[in-house]
Length: 266
Image (cartoon, rainbow, N blue to C red; front, side, top):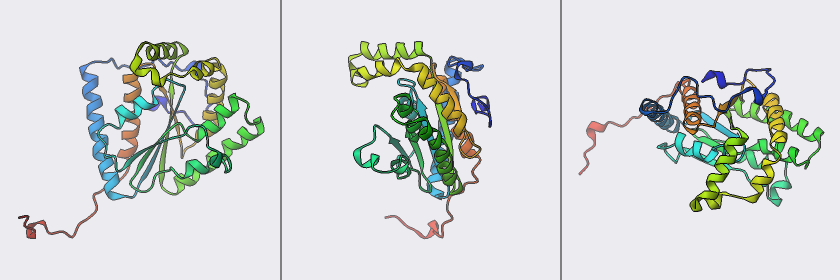
């Protein structure tokens, strides 16, 4: 999975990365068993994280529409203790949020000790959507790269482990997933005509993502570009990467002075 980790000081070219990639893996019972084993290990590690209350983990998910942010959250974090795992979604900013700096609403959502917080979209919207739609000038979004790096560096210095994932799909795969939503009445609520307008701006978004990932890929907040055309492989890459990060923590359950032998439950 390390091959999806963007190397430092590397210029990102998304057209050189294959969203269909699945390594040497093929979907089947063996893969299902592998994913289940990873999920069980993640559940164990998350319980330790929550009990010990020393480490903080921030997961950032960014992607084009239909790339699977919701699906990733549903499948990768299945079974975890909801007391220690939170999802924060960032839509168009409110009037109050616009009255503050662009990181104000984000800072309130970062994890506390013992927590995993997943950003379903994030502060990166403020160098992506606003750039593509020319809502801010080039000078502003260039400056924001530095402000994001400083913000994430501060979080890392305060003990937050940050993992950022771009779920990479092709325009053809997005077209099929949008059509699937139209074909299924139960998924009509997910469909918006605005998705079609955004789809027309695909090249502009790819350029914005390339620049943003290149500028904000740091040792303290690395980016991973995840092939996401195959949903099962997307889940495997994200889950494996998070599990590996959690395994680097030297975690232990808090010591207890409780003498269980002296307690009788009647």
